[in-house]
Image (cartoon, rainbow, N blue to C red; front, side, top):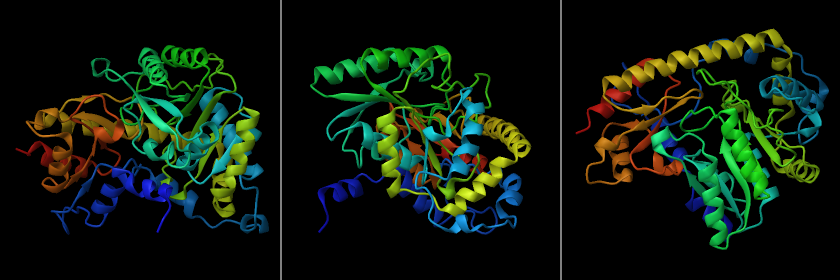
Length: 402
């Protein structure tokens, strides 16, 4: 009844999405539903609504252009406002004409993979990696992902040698590799990549004649000691085969608005991505709202500073809860997640069995490492950017598993 492509997409629906829907139907409440599910599996920032509410809900003037057809790759006003923000974030001059605005960073990832890859070609991705890349970079493009396993001994830090080994092995196997992909800062580990590590990865890509896809959606959510460095930083001289994704879902806590951005300076990639934006446009009204929000530069600076402070506090609370239960983790420097080691609960079972125990017995939603291409079993992604009491209760339940 459906095409082979539709059947394949349905069969590979991300575990992260299925678990999210399940737990949201029966959420924990300490008074009304103390036995409900605790959701630490969804990377959503629930710490900043009080900062956003006035900006998002305030009455505003709507102009005719805000309810009519506009440029499907983003209004000139929003692209100009976004370029100002990203120029500051990336420490690089961003031309608004090099931005393609689409309905979420997910759409931007899908578009760039579809532009770069023919079916059967490959993208090497540093692992562990954001679980939805399995669908976003392959579902429509027909490409395949080849993980480059990073070492747990170094806290899964970015290693160009691992990336190059994966490229070399793929080519020995007769696979055409078209690009290298990284999440920067990393989801799920929260690692902030150093200038040196990024330089080495870009050098590998250049040596092997490959494009680079960098998902930098957490660029303004860095709270640790390591400063954020974009792959577009002028010190790296990455060239026009480096393509960057960013969006409003994480840094601004506006995941439901579904607004993402692809930056590329490559003329052919830009032209093709602009054409594909036809299938993933953002409503003109949403674009007007975000343009107005970004126009208040003082508010934006204050919001991002406060958000980073709250993220740091949220992580400290999660770290204390993990320590209380004797659960090791990789210390993150950015983002909403903690890469958590539950291997001592594996016993003779598999990671998938442990995941179901955590979900069914503890009634806690954590995402297993297999969904992120984890090189080692027993690792789970924990999202801490929610009520601190919920984090404490969830980890109490997990720690109580026999």
